[in-house]
Image (tube, rainbow, N blue to C red; front, side, top):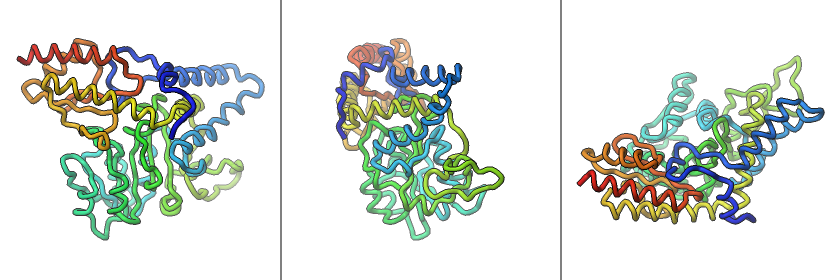
Length: 375
């Protein structure tokens, strides 16, 4: 999708310090998000006449903004406070056998395991991923007729690999496809219509801060998932006084109570900004920066263990200096003000469209220092 705002205008709303390469962990907030926080805080602190209705009106706005980016009707999207809660809703609502890699981010594995242990309607089939990647071939070789659903990350948090949703859908047929989209939502132009359940938080690439997220359901998923945790706010068309009403159909059933209006307004503002510039423009800018990061790693002899092909990657680059030099690399990055995630002996770098030339220069300086120390 293409928008009406230039990439330069979009990036001008961000002010992270040079050296920040950790968007896969947390995305610094934009001016638009901070402004929404200020407005909502003002309304909540003064309770100016007629203002409280504006506070409660954010739900429709945020669902509409998410639905626009996903290409779905607004009523198929529900706001969630984080990815984990959305995954819990989905897994506790499933029946049958869900297949997934044990190497998925714990939000997925814990939600499935807790649902299996608590209700007994769901069981987990642990896949053996291909080099940490869940591919169509992985699924073709390991699925059987007992499996009723497959859960996968759009972008793997360890390897940076972008799942082939089209290939996965072809292999799994009419089984439910659950996608944890947090490492790619708003920066990967994914075929969302192929997924039955889409869950994402807003604190990483969306850059909306913690306490933000969404759950989107296909019509098929809405029919099959049981809304185990469905509160009195599920059907907001009428106040359910003196009665307990049945959960409504669709994504609305997975609401419990009033969310934070600050969180909803900030999330909506971030999504609206993305729609303004277009996911394709953001994705292209990220791809160009990733090319630069990979070229620097090659120049200084640091192994890149994440995908190199654009079709298989998003904004994550994983560097492996080897067991003997892992600490040296981590120290060089830290000492030169380059913020990354180091885990398991590798360094995960993640860039956004706002990553600037100064950040790339700092990375070059850090890698120069690393090379000198390693030699």
